[in-house]
Length: 478
Image 1 (cartoon, rainbow, N blue to C red):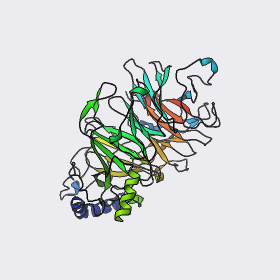
Image 2: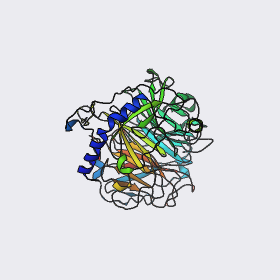
Image 3: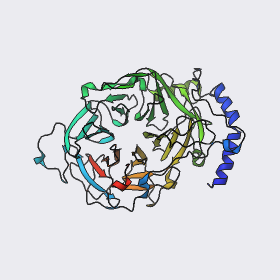
Image 4: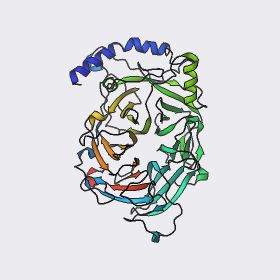
């Protein structure tokens, strides 16, 4: 869609916003069928004014990172993996083993924790001694959990151990600013668990206040004391948990109180009460959102929605996001926060989240309550194979948004918001999916896994392999 046409449509949308917004304030028109009044909007809709300069932006002012300038992929010599020139890759773990060598050998000796089966979502935590920890979920049931690899300042693996055991289908999750890992259960009555990367399974704790549903991933905004959560379901919602304040975390550091707060679901203006943005062109245009309280947050949400729909004949609260997957928050540095046309606040923090049901990546401006689709398959540069199920998301210290693929093409993508995107790497062979991408704090290393291995790799067929990609210095933060 060209600029002039999008601007014309946006003017029409703004022109009709007064009626739509007044309807939202008065009630959800069936979106709250149990007659619970919606929570007040804590982020009032900005006054658009009467001048063209105040018209709501058609696109959020988002920028790609330096990895968009990578060259064409070439064979790395490791398991047939294709990577850009100058990049390097090595295996760091295989299910049942750990290794920093090219081929795992029994001579590595005994280890405390054999690497888990089906590694999934992950994150990196920098340590005071110059080393770091990579945490990784195990997406199996009934004996899932989380394991870690500990590295010294020279990048050598010094330890591996579990920090969560005996949970179910741990898919993704998210790191917290106070250096803990939130691990999510992808089952209908799933919970979120907080884990200490330097702790043990005994230090982990369950967080039922974050909701009971098919949890996928979590992102935390400390400034607003809010957590954002995705739901992996065809009728899933996007949730936020507004914490009641601060509390001591399991690692002794001050963190958010995740036992007390309000759980809410997002509704896009014009798509309330179980509606879905079918039209992609419309979804690519910035729209306003509001948040409404979750009904019966202490019960499985798929059941609650079904009961509401049967009892009332109306949709349950929340816009539908089909197959919510990875989510990550990017906070822009002071002095680099552009103004958003038609909004009161500069662009401080953006939540990116993926939905595999329609291969979309959304961007949510959390201070201005605005949302748009910033990636779909029409934006993928050659090769022409469409991205097959967007999955885990991470953001580098340099601002690169990396999206993993849940399909047989097995690629990591460098996403260019609202522009042409590139493939960062690919593992040929299929039969698996790429999971758990996460950067070290200096941007030097990117960790990820082939969840079930691949035909060219070592280990037992069907089990996972975790890799480390070295990012050349010219692509890194200073």
